[in-house]
Image (cartoon, rainbow, N blue to C red; front, side, top):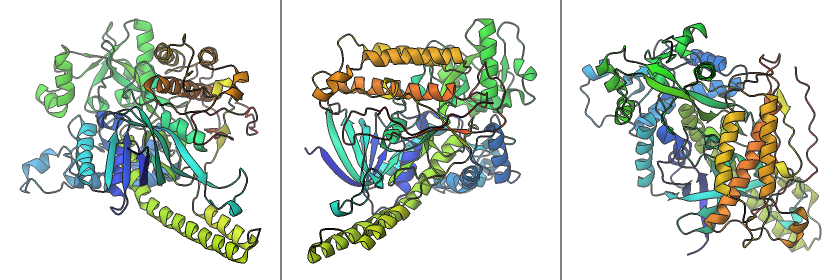
Length: 636
């Protein structure tokens, strides 16, 4: 079986963003979708609450935007926010057309004379309310919206003859090449490059694959599994962010890791207690005193934005020593609870908690990365032919703190925007290649040693006009170390790592470190300690640099080699995240510094510039000592 696959479009990630893109692309395109594990192992599948959109006649896009900007604490990109939220009604209607069984309103059910196969309309849907929203605008499918959405889309994707889904296939590295491939037209390192596929690890057959494609969509999810308690499945370790960074993309606002206020605090459970419980009247209490503490924290009480509620709960936990607070809905009718939250009710009941009569122990858990790969609302990144959508991407919609249920909407809207933009890119790419071939033929016929100057600039201008990188305003640059703190290991296949390095042990310790030092609250002391510890771990898996000249680069071909690769990448990402937090001298949204508790006068987006030099088509990436000149921004 060949280790090379060719496809028109490669989509890395089979969650909501990836499948929304795949199902919206023209059926004339051959599409390959990678899933790192089984299809249900993605954050989209576990989303409980719903998808936020202004669907009610009393609501408006303007109000939805306003609530999002407030939650985002001054860091939302207003144009992208308005554009994404403005497409909310169309996105929900598209999901209805895919067969998603959204919960209908009571009035609709009472007057429903339509046949079962009729497509739901957005006006039919029951809307719930969640924290930060000024009204009911969250469409949902009971309390398991993500599962119902994904089941419907997976059925559609399997039925599509042009879509091939490859489970247990993990992307390792994005492949890029010069946009203008002819040697006579090649330039230096400033040559415009485009993404043309990925290097992939096939877990089923334990082998490498190279997938070539005309365009790539990165929809690989977030990085929650860098923390000890996380709602995300174990595949969400930020690998998409790192692949894009290595390929030449900017990253933004990685310090804004949102903690869901109410994860189930029972043993090592990663189960979430949906924000919709608080939207329907759930209350938070101190287990020891019975005090409803949110009344003294924020006028919105339990319906304040997530960062406020999470910090309030964390403060309670630090003082009560129990590791949890109580979320109580027992004052609501039991029939209502069972009807609206059947999954949560049944799950808790199997654990010995009857939520109709008993309080639920909850604590904050790492939940969502508000930062990521810089993109526009159409999903374009800094690398031509590379799109990004979902949690891996930074559109600016979430700012410093994501408003509840905006993430599913972003997945669908940006995914469908990518599907509308991508065919135009492919047409331009074909035109460029055809023109290049004609110019090359003309040169051969004329037997000219040097290319036509006119043709050279015409081709280069066409390449430059094919792709518009996203623009950002009001930015600050994160200064990264130039040596081993941001480097990847280089090794021979038969000497992947030192015998005394236990990658699983370090991975567990890294989770504990980031949870303790990069959690809901941070300080310079904690962040410095984290950086020193990460550097020590990096040294434990790094060969002496004098050996580099004698070693060959090679992508992992076995599970043991893959383990050290994954660990090295996670350590490098941890350094970037912690450095981003260390260099933001304020408290804003999901980033709270005990030593800088106030807002800065100017809201600035943190930017990590891409690697200046990388070795493509290889596993190893060593950051050069020479980096982009990055200005040091004085803090306020």
